Amino acid sequence: MLNALTALSQGTRLVYSRGLRRYVFLPILANLLVYAGMLSYVLSHFGGWLDGWMAMVPGWLDWLSWLIWPLFVISLVVIVFFTFTLVTHLIAAPFYGFLAEKVEIEVTGRAPLDDRGLVRTALDALGRELVKLGYILPRMLLLFVISWIPVINLMAPVLWAAFSAWTMAITYLDYPMDNNKVSFADMRRRLATRRWPTLTYGGWVMLITWVPLANLFLLPGAVAAAVLMWDRHYRDLTPVTASR
Image 1 (tube, rainbow, N blue to C red):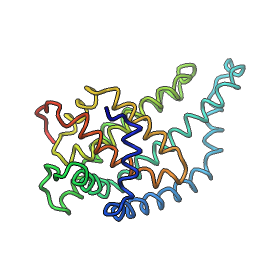
Image 2: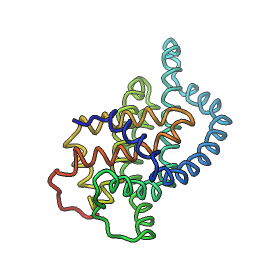
Image 3: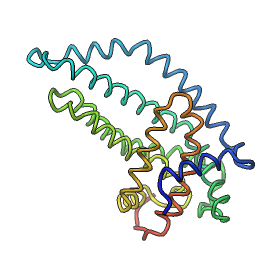
Image 4: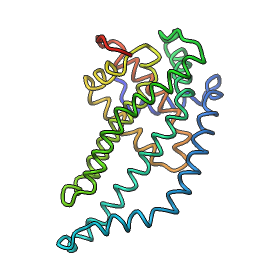
């Protein structure tokens, strides 16, 4: 059975093979520009954010400051990288959708079911990203609130990690599913049906996003891996009727 790590390894080799590597340069460039801008912003504000969080810790929890401080740091870093990931995918979505289509043709020998033109596909890809944001942001906000509640926020890093894995799976596996006319609701149902491959794939992609600079070159491989996972684990699941 194709597992997530194998898919990521195969997918990365695939996108940099002759015939496909030309499709990865634009998303890498777009992500590089966002990465540089966000890194500069975070480095200039990180200390103030951390001081503000620590100032909200009640006095009776001062004895736990040795534990709360690193947990706050971890939560803040996760939030920053989570935001970076959302922004870069919003910008790179049209390129990733196109890359997923080319990979599917290369891997399966047949084109996706999508019959939209290039311009329509790009516009719809942006719309689909907004649908993802509508699903992700309220849940992200809830976790953000939890991160500020004393005692409860001790679980925040674990909750952020689990949610990040699920979100990464939704983000990347949606590219081949959107190309094959799978609705967002049906996509989430399919991912929940195959929960183990979904979360392991999302977890590995989440780890990739944490590798500075190298992640810019590894994420196109995650797109190709999503196509491999789609073809092996999700394509044959019974669809449900839902609005696109």
